[in-house]
Length: 444
Ligand code: GTR
Image 1 (cartoon, rainbow, N blue to C red):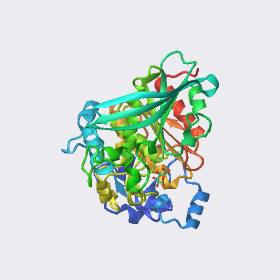
Image 2: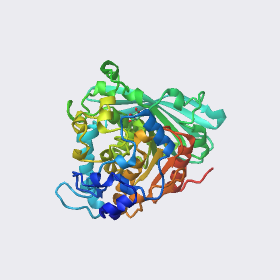
Image 3: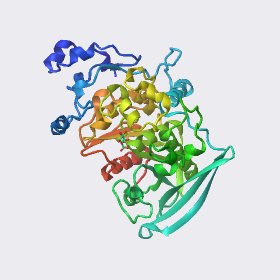
Image 4: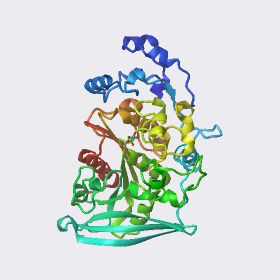
């Protein structure tokens, strides 16, 4: 990270053809973390580069948002290791005891809202079992999960496919399905690369899934939303109008309730459960993994704004754009930062750091400028000092790997794949390669 503290001279910036540098570098930036110079200064770095043809296409379409690295303003990230009282975190126990809790509190208060505490009762009903799923290779269970608290209850369904050949408990991948049922169909009548369940099972993992819309409808329509879990407990653990939970928080809560179930299933090794989400599901996976440390691996695929991407870069989707498009995803307090990213008490590298020292994998797509591919990687790099406290190697900001070249450090991994915003079999293979290594899983 130290390289970012060394300001690049205007002369060398000009030599590199970075005309925008001078103006951007002198912009004042709030925050107290590493000084991050205007992004133009990053051009000499190795690794992924935006495809000029894709940039030309965005140019032609005259998109109204920022997609050129040279247009990224100077910004200063909040220092993830500085406590609210000004002291610095220097050891892992200090992080866990003090700064981790403060960081979680900031995200609850300002971004995602406060989720309710674990319901006083959660119970499970297996509503269907098929021991001959996947041509006899798997057992499929459909489970109804009911949560009850304060005299009210809410139910939704999750599904689990376990390989029949397994000799003992197996590790599992839980997908937050933010798309249609057909994208991740537990019956396997419809197959889709979004959830290659056959491949997941063939590699010795169980595959679990639930749908976001079964927990909290993904719509601006308040009547429709009332049918979700927030219709039952509207404020969650906060106050409506400021820090009540919102849709991303509700989906994350759903992931934790599925985890409650997985912890009871004798076929699953619940100490090795990976939570995977794509895009809005990726934001959810990160927030769920931050709050619920039972997830041993958190996977963010193309999660973009308010997911893995650094908000202060304002690249692609901005805080204002997401709050306008999806006002129900985040708490009301988050709207105070529309157009004011520098004033946010946190940035997304701190969300990623909340996964430490567990496994964390971030994936991007080459054509996914809206999600800010580089911002997703940089967030992971800037979260790395927390992994370092635990003795684990992370990434430096200058180490973004080239296209289609996954990079793994001890507990963190990253790739940027060719193609558009999507979750694909290529992504899944990389997630499983990472989990194999993290958990010493041998292919059956
Ligand atoms: C977009 C939204 C993104 C991302 C995406 C998705 O419209 O702006 O933040 O969540 O949807 O979920 O596919």
